[in-house]
Length: 208
Image 1 (tube, one colour):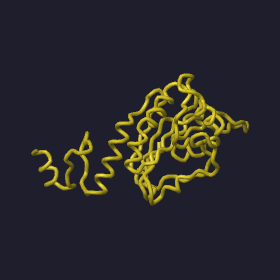
Image 2 (spheres, one colour):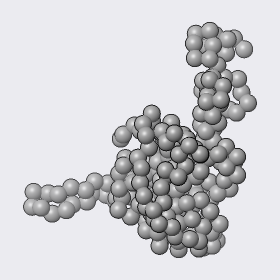
Image 3 (cartoon, rainbow, N blue to C red):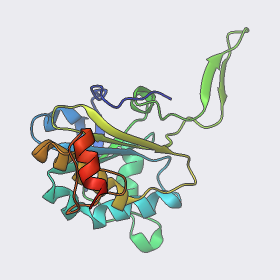
Image 4 (cartoon, rainbow, N blue to C red):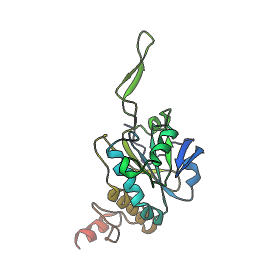
């Protein structure tokens, strides 16, 4: 598993569904210098854990927007599958109402670039193409800053849903550090005391 933290986020251009529209050549480069990005991967459309995550991101979209964060979802499904899912009512297993972009990684190159692609594909000694497992994305999540650098990543196995609260907490911690130059200790929440990155700062924080 690659660690992308501290590195430029891999670039891509792909089809995406935004609301009820299919767009061409969607890229994260449009956010450079303007917004932070939470890019999250999920295994498949029309499944079980995935819609709970996609709906929760939508429920909290104003919290992300208030922090200048663009939320972008991605799976290895096609843009047509994304479009059908967005246009299926929630009570029928759909994600109608989701407004943030859903990227179609049909060629699996984006998932591979972010190293969240499950399964393996090889060519055997007979020249046959062999796939073990399913070539779908794990539940990867990447926080990308306004310079296009990955500042946080987490990857869950497919049965394990993520925490939106933790995602927002990390966004707040990064922005607090950028604004105040203070580092954020374990379980730090917005509004809590932080500390300077030196021995005196640690001592002062622990003595409170």
